[in-house]
Length: 122
Image (cartoon, rainbow, N blue to C red; front, side, top):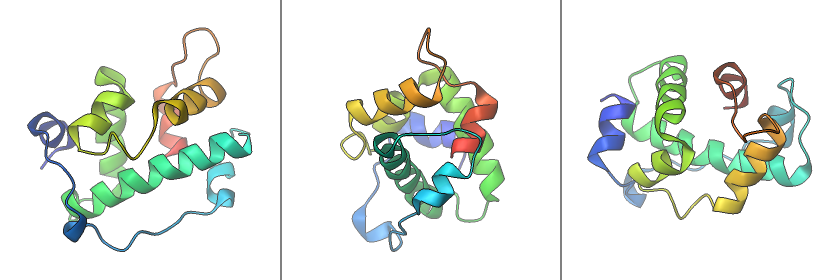
């Protein structure tokens, strides 16, 4: 199932379907070319965990790189908040966490993250 189709069908994550949650380290977050504050790194880790759980359930047979490409496409067209709402995870990543990620990793003028940078972050 493509991410766009799953996002539009508003399939919520079911706790029993989610594999054991792995906690990424801060080193994995800061290994990209973006230097982030501790707050932004935690927010990004939280977003990564939510997206990884969704990938494990709904993109099980796809390569992680395919998931990332689909994800970046959906985020570019609809935004992070809409994506999270459509996959049933809007309560797991707060608006302030999204704002922190956009402020620190995105362009300062309009709070957007270029697609290539988003690929490196997630």
